Amino acid sequence: MKHLFIVLSLFLPLALVGQNLEITYIANEGVLIANNNQKVLIDALFDDFYKQYSSPSEKVVTSMMASENPFEQVKVVLTTHMHRDHFEANITGEFLKEHQESRFLSSNQVRDELKAKYVDFSSIQGRVKAYVRGVHTLKDEINGVTVYSFFIYHAGGERTRSIENMGFIVEVGDKRVLHLGDSDMNPDRFKEVDLAKYEIDVALVPYWYMTSDAGIDIINNSIKAKQLIGIHYPKAPSKTALEQIEKNYPQAKVFQKAMETFISN
Ligand SMILES: [Zn+2]
Image 1: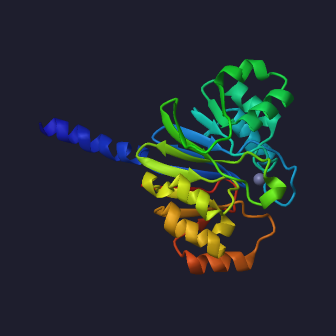
Image 2 (image 1 turned 135 degrees about the horizontal axis):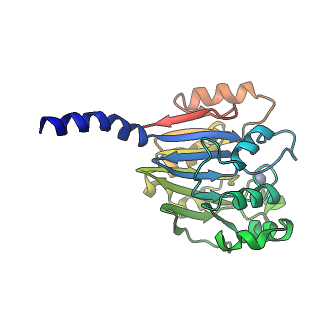
């Protein structure tokens, strides 16, 4: 019995370390979410088409393609929408070709773009899943990761109505993480989607949600997450926005530096 105790106490700390939720910032709204070897990559495969927002450096792209730490065994790849500061077809296609373990989920619009622009689409097609825009929240088990997905209009009103924007809740280990893409701050749609029922641990929200009345209402009354992280922060820093966020949500973090990580246990 004494031996068993020694063995357990040796292995227990390691087991606990493995249970940490780790979110690594790639660029703009791109993140790698990992817990206990379950890894999900969201909105991280694109280039520097839009100069005002950060994009993955060449070094980071090479590292992602080569499955270098922390990009080994990425079980799920998600894209919220087709805008070039979230998604680029060839980089996404190449990633999926290099990562035979990865499965991809997005909208029909993103899938069509991937199919039209990535020459080797047939080699990855079997691991690509896409949804028609609709009103219901859908649930998938992908490579052992539970993913809830829902469509919600892109910010910008009529001008961007045609963009099929998705939000995702991913369940990694015992944690739930929300990613909103560029969701419009429409309180009615948030009421329908009813995110509070998922008991979200970490919500990744466009940083401007934390500085506007509409966004604050959604964060406090619809999302109700334990932790907030601001994303889509521009290259040219907005000091007033950061001060406002600090005031409204002192515990919140805003991702700004490539490969910085947020860890929660
Ligand atoms: Zn967008």
